[in-house]
Length: 124
Image (cartoon, rainbow, N blue to C red; front, side):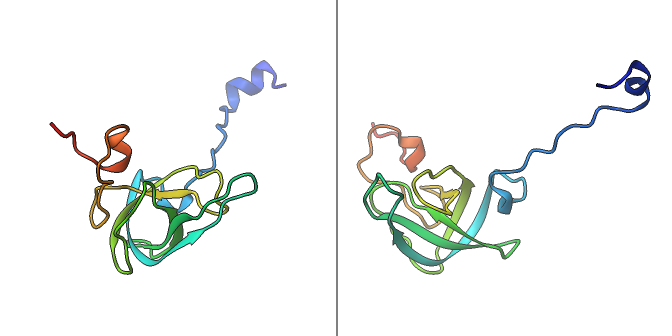
């Protein structure tokens, strides 16, 4: 516990919060290029094949793995995507996701609910 004199002389130090998506360098999204599109099986209680993509960020040249949300996709090698930090709980080592409906990744077709996550415009 600091004394009254110590608090008047020394300023309080703030704790530095470690980022959950450090490769984005404090940015909300980053542009990336696909290196490889593949599938990965999730952790223990779940079972399926999740679509993931290995990426290279354009500015920093660092490599990362991101999940492709939604049912189907049109990604292939050398496609350009937009990446954001996302907590993917059942995939080990994946803490990023690609944004649908931006650059080369199309939105999910015939989507009616939660359209903003999957890059679908409102149908009239």
